[in-house]
Length: 150
Image 1: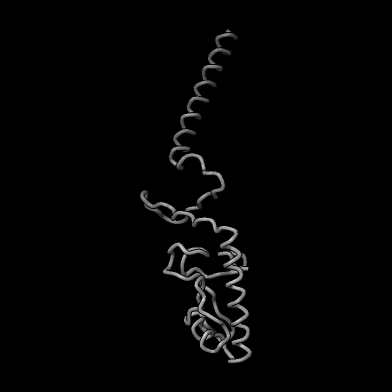
Image 2: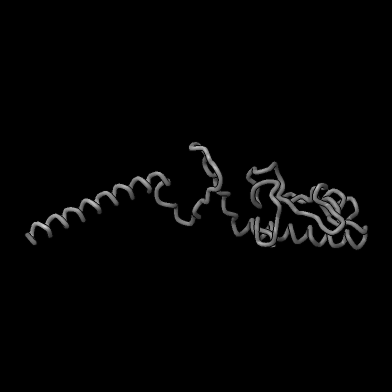
C-alpha cells in the first residue's frame, strides 16, 4: 500500500507543477512578456481600458547633446540672474535678448511668460509639447539633472 500512496503523491505533485507552469505562461503572456533590457516596470493605477498602452520612452540624449543642453541652460540661468539684478524681475528669452542680457535667443530652450513669477521662472525645452527635441520632449520643464540640464 505504501507504493500506491507514494505513486499517487508523485502524480499529484506533477499535476500541480503542470498547472503552475500553465498559469505562469498565462500570466507572463498577459503582462506582455519579458521586459526589455534597461526598461522599468510599468505601474498602472486606476481603471484602464484593455487597449491602453504606455507611451513610448523618450530617446536617450547623446553626450554631445547633453553638454549643449547643459551649456544652454547655464547661460539662460546666468541671464535670468542678471535680469533679476538689473531689471528687478525675471524675463522671457525675448526680453533677455532685447535688454542685452542674452546675445541671441536659445535654439534649445525657452522661458515662457506663463512661468515667470516674482520669485522664479521655468526653463522648458523648445518645441511643441511632447515633440522630439535635442534636449528632450518639447515644452518639458527642465529641472536639475533632467533633459540634459545641470
